[in-house]
Amino acid sequence: MPWQEWVGDKTVVEPSIYAADLSRLGDQVEALLDAGARIFHVDIGDGRFIEEITIGPIVVRSLAPLVHGRGGVLDCHLMVAEPGRQLAKVKEAGGDSVTFHVEAVEDVQVTVASARALGLGVGLALNPSTPVEAALAAADAVDLVLCMSVHPGLSGQAFMPEALPRVAQLRRLLPQEVLVQVDGGISLENARAVREAGARLLVAGSAVFWQEDPVASYQALVAEAEAGVP
Image (cartoon, rainbow, N blue to C red; front, top):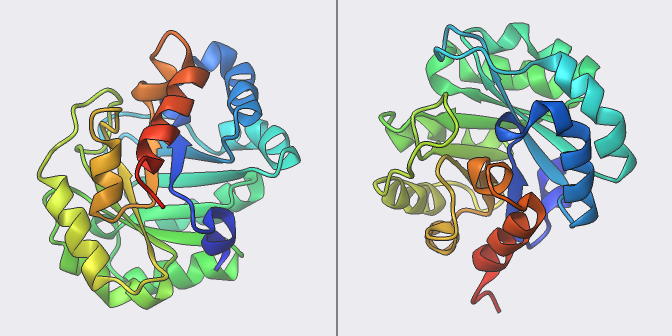
């Protein structure tokens, strides 16, 4: 599975470009690549599954040469009502992995198989109100499970502390090779706790891009997420 190669034994902070200054997106991504970031989170919203229309494959296409040229990965989070319709478009644009919401599909296994057939990494996302057990039926077929720690949509929402026991429950129930990802409100105040609960992938948007120095903020989050790891 590609995610094991991309992550290794590290805890990874993924800058979420939805929170970036889109007028300076290439420069901001390049600066983060210089700082060591290699996995970038791309939130694709359709105005149906979530209220907001965010960014789409055209942005992935623009970023792919820069990110791939530096050995990086574009991790695409499909906050859309019919994720199966977007898989080929994301792949053609240069996306490396797709995560879709269990709430958005009738048959999780069919969507997973479609993504795998395209050579994509695959994740399964759970909204805050969705029982973690909803991810278990497909647990052996995916690379990661994304535990939302805010309601999907807007950047800048506060972290929901009730996500921590959900992360810990997922880590206990999932196969060890399946990674746990957390998205929403990640900050210096909670990054270590999220990692200690069992997450290895921490998506950070406003905590990176809305700060005066995004590179320094990213580096501080990485340090905090890895603090205390032998």
